[in-house]
Image (tube, rainbow, N blue to C red):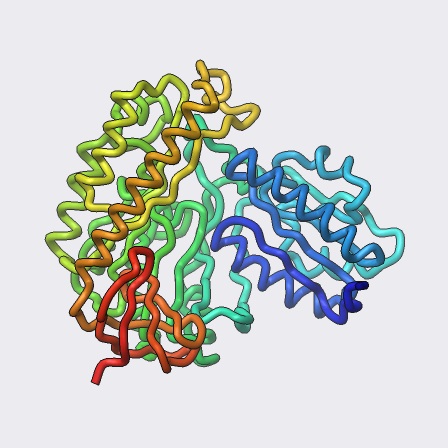
Length: 422
């Protein structure tokens, strides 16, 4: 059966929360430009698999919508523009520096416009403070506070897709947060590529902790503020104090740990050691006992021995992680790690699976410890929400978008089960 005609721009978002934010900017700009029969695919490039999925999505959309205009953007396009330009399914390519510019979207409405608009991302020095009206079908809203990255981890291509680190001035962030709260959002997530680098490029060099304090002070109606992934070694003292002192700052931190082996961390060109990660988690947990930690971890990095991998398994235990985001190592062309001695793929996959199993056990332990407690919940849809520490919970009778107090009555091992507290 034929797909129904497209009556407004369709946005398909792959990858991170920053992409989710930018997709809403593009949705509004494409709609303003009158691009009704348009499918925008916002790609990710964090792994080779992410790029493969992006290309697969493009081909599927062309099959399902042969008459639509397909615009492809995002990190995969920025890093490998020719690879996507060679795809006959693609009508237009936009780089990360172009994809949120209103004049670029307006140009797509003009016949005979340029097919490929991908400039050098390293020349970008500002991050525009786009005011997004809302996030359809989402209970929480995202606010971009930073973009880009100045670090050069040996496995990562994202700096080449996002450019140098640059921050959104705090006044613009507060304005956006206030606008979203006025629109009815109960929770806001601060997002970026490297948000703990926030402010280094701004006058006075404000920090992420200072920004958090300003948001909570100047937007008193905001009920819940959450941070996306942070680099714990960059966490400033004011941020740590805010975690300890601000109940509206949610007790959930997702950390960029990557490995538990000091030698592998050195070969990754990370800026922390194993002891630093453990010390940070211990200190934050002492200050905020209800905090829950998640982490990005890579399995099967080049030269990783079994003993080194065991150190990563042990780190997950020592840090008391509840949520593991596991990446099987994926060599990205042009990175130093791609030139290092690679492990057999079956070893990489096996270690990733073992790390996921460890993550499942840690999550189950964390959830079991919540049984009997009273928790705050933001309902993402009717009957299903997230607690303050980001555990998924079923709460019968609670409606999407509401914030409820719930009593945890049990767990199925993957999520909590609760009831609205009296």
